Length: 190
Image (cartoon, rainbow, N blue to C red; front, side):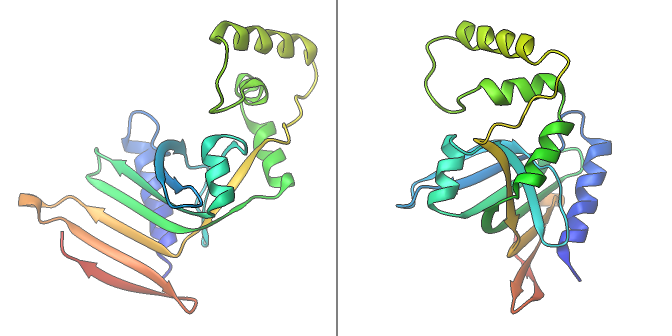
């Protein structure tokens, strides 16, 4: 069995049960010397090999993933009493994949992605708003090109863990490890 099929099903169920942002996941990355950091990002798809998300390549997370291409993510769906964790190596998605996703985003999100020097210091939010207004005018009636500094990442799943809330804190935890191309399940104590 491929646990990513179950993971995708859990995400689909969360889309029905969670009020806001069921795709939200905590992404943990680390610098080249192993200093960790974590932040929330949105999962933009799970397939039979892993999952993807999009961000600025020059953001802190982008720089960390370039320097140390490994990550872990965790979803928490309180309404379902579930958590999902995935770990594995990370690579950038192709330019074509990033272009396709970028063009499918709401126009305001495209503009924000194009103007924001994500994770970098800025003089003021008003200055960023002015740049947003200028870009909006400049591309009125035209497609906004994806910035070369923005795109997608793919986490190739090597570890998948399912956590289901249990009575009296006797939670069910099942971990799947990819070993030699075969997924091996292990039941873990809560």
